[in-house]
Image (cartoon, rainbow, N blue to C red; front, top):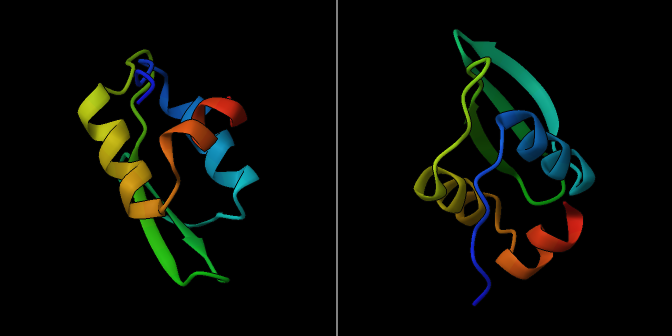
Amino acid sequence: MPKIPIISARKLVKVLKKKGFVLDHILGSHHIFYNSESKVTVSVPVHKGRDLGKGITLSILKDAKVAIEEFTELL
């Protein structure tokens, strides 16, 4: 299994958009994305100047049903 890179929320959002997710709404600092094909909703905490930890990145990818290998290719 490839290592999960530490990335910013902005980069994760770009990957989600490539997978067909669209911004549904924003609640405070959390951006809620929805994929109408798979009917999946994911929340990404967006804090300026801070990177996402490996655990939260892995959890978001799991919820979005994106494989780690596919994620690293889309970066």
